[in-house]
Image 1 (tube, rainbow, N blue to C red):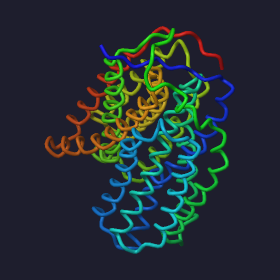
Image 2 (cartoon, helix red, strand yellow):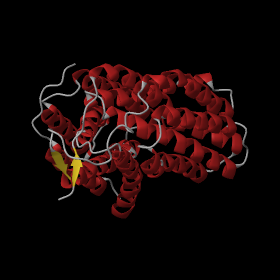
Image 3 (cartoon, rainbow, N blue to C red):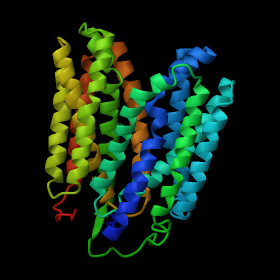
Image 4 (cartoon, rainbow, N blue to C red):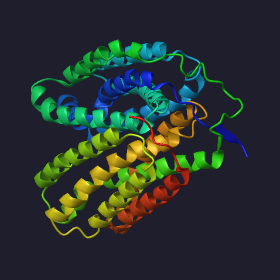
Length: 392
């Protein structure tokens, strides 16, 4: 059977620089997704775009984030990562600046696609470097928590800060923040992937069957199909139970707090021999949250489900990604994982929408989401093995 080489961890002394790189870039690169509601309102107000056009714009941006995986198969192991980051950051800065000057919808879509391709390319580097640290679960925890922290700040500050400004001001702010990331580029070893052999004899850590690699990709894909399908329709589920929109918005905003807490917890705990138990606990919580959404009868049940859902989701993710990173082999393992994330995000809402329309309710959608969650758990468990404790 074909195999993927097991990972070789770098010295722990290189980790701090990688952690800094991950924290700064993950916070800034995902801004466009975090402030989508703010940008959407500005686009409708300023250019009179229809909801369909706004949805198309964000679909193209999200798709470009994922499609950045495809060209990365060609350059990831060949380019110096410092040079690549400088190049892609420059493109992202230029794309945001240009976006602020455009008044044509077609040109705006093109500019946002190019900008997202650049940002997605840096995301590929982030995920790959996370797997090269001595404590991947901590690295992936940092990746998640700084996105959530930035999201909380943005949603609190941006609506008021840009209340009387056009969408250009938002794009230019994103360009300025991207420029602020440049000083941390030198904190990573740009040749870490180029020094690795493309193929070779397995070391003492042995080899990992391709079957586990496929199971790991399936775990990530099913995880994102299930969670994105449910999260996209949380407001509609609550509305069906008679919960008003303002209350729903408040509950979902509060649910950000347990999400931040759980990702911080995963970051602090880092890699652990108890990873199997952590994953199992997280998946049980996620399944319980989905189960709570069946027949929601009021705001308290909905709030409990939303908070458990967000806590479990962001607790699982670092440990699931670190399970994939343990497969090693090459930087393309995490590159392919990024593709699965984007694919899951694309499939989940579309599948849930079809299920809701065809069934006339949320039961079938929630049943499919629950099945995806349990199937993802099964796949994730096949990746786990007995591991030695990892130093902090």
